[in-house]
Length: 67
Length: 170
Image 1 (cartoon, rainbow over the protein chains, first blue to last red):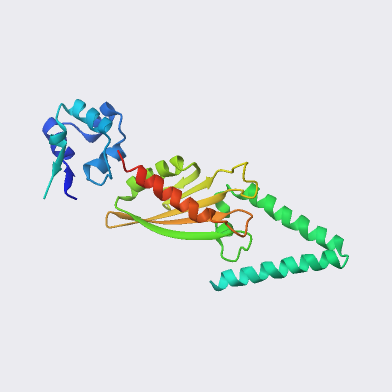
Image 2: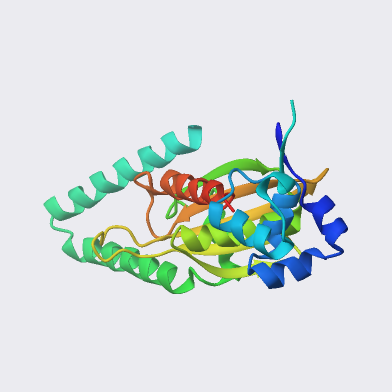
């Protein structure tokens, strides 16, 4: 998949676990796992917004386009 | 295909027998058969939510139910697939009755629509097999007390798949 989700890298940088992110964002661990594995079909702006807010990062830090 | 042809022949023979009984004045025999059929239908409705009766409802020898099997593969581990299937079933207006994590099977029923009195709902049985970080799902939809599904089995599967796809938008 050309667009990958770098959630695991950001989580490691911020020293935050997936469970903690799930608690802070209100997104289920299952959905975050799917997102982390880049297996989701699409991502809502609202989801991206809350993740960016909690992780204090930009959408470009989370999503990456690979040729 | 052979089973379907045999089933159709059995129905045609049965209808002809019933017509013969009425026209020849065997009303008593006709009423007895009718009562037996109504009894079978009521018992099906009473037993449909009991997991123990699954082999009975999905048996190929049961001519009172119509079964359709589908297989699909998901790119997730079993645990994630179970959660997503649960989400898809709820969104697809199915009611989850039982989830057995030991046998990796999910049992749900479709809701009965009062506007369609000829449709009494279907039983949905999903069996999951995990292999190499992928999960294969065997989806079986069985009508209850109806020998023909009127396309409901296919519709159930399509609804389930559509809801599953939708659930992947996070």
